[in-house]
Image (cartoon, rainbow, N blue to C red; front, side, top):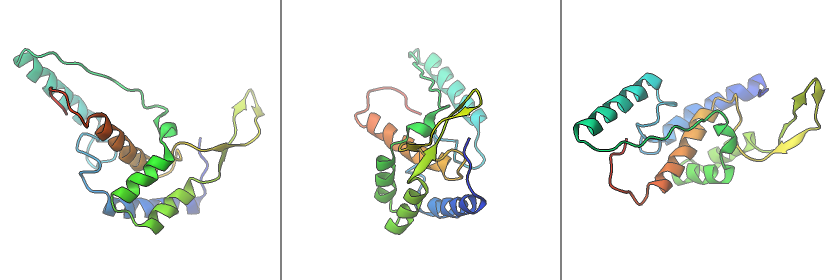
Length: 157
């Protein structure tokens, strides 16, 4: 659980609004519905069903991978994320403000009523922050672009 101050949450919302002005549809493709308005899991299920039908019609195999993103926000490499923001035209001052929200983060663990000592969090984006889903989408898009740079024949969605 993330505990952010009210002022911090408001600041993050303002930064998110500004971020939307810098991130073009090419950065976060149509295939990512999590941060797009008027999109949902239903849209992705529809696309998957269409893809399945096309592969059946064309007698082509279909391979699918399902990824559990339940801990995904914790896996974002911050250095790479900041590079992506700069690469896509986010001003340095703006990127530095987003970085500031993620520096010197502390966490502790509670087990059986006992709370651990605080420890630094050096990876991931802040869960519960308005920016987190969009930052994750930007990072994930960069990872997928790199993974599919040398495309193999097939159908891509």
